[in-house]
Length: 215
Image (cartoon, rainbow, N blue to C red; front, side):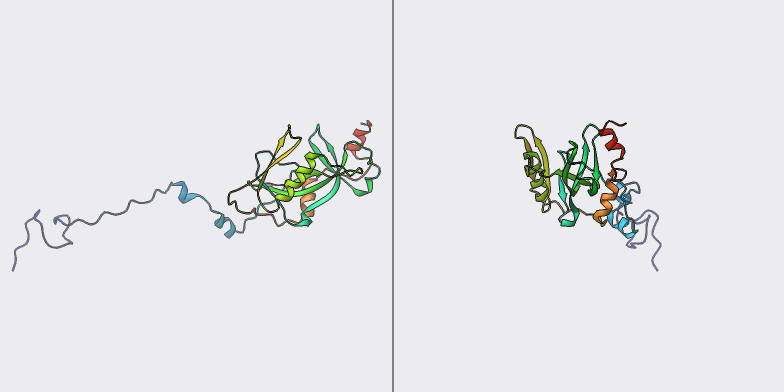
């Protein structure tokens, strides 16, 4: 019968710890519970929860010169119509078709192509691009904007005014940028949201009365 080991002396028993010389292997440090990477919500989580962002605002505007934008490829997401533009107020009003003949001589009244567009931040907007008037003429600014909107159907573009050229410079992205995530709202809903409170449907509309000097 062997004698018990003297305390502090090494043994051959791997479970003899702390008295033996065998020590357990080091363990991995516990993850930091406050590491942002472990706390950040992912797009997959949002989708799994069935969350859908409500579209409450659709700006009526041309893109900023720093934006990369796409335009909706479907023809039903663009509209040739007519608007009244108040440049000093930076406001654009949609005009009901029954008033077009009466407003044909109004200088703020013009035909426009409303193009559904989106930037890389996911902001959906309606891009109003001037169309030829009764004389069938179109200035270089409008022509280059229309060409940019057509190019943006297939790829990301950036539009910047070139005052020396008298038209827009159009840049096409060369990187592999993913396609935009278009909203599933029909075009008429985008029009309704974008022109909320900005539909001129009567000659007595406050905007027209203001232009006539009645108010």
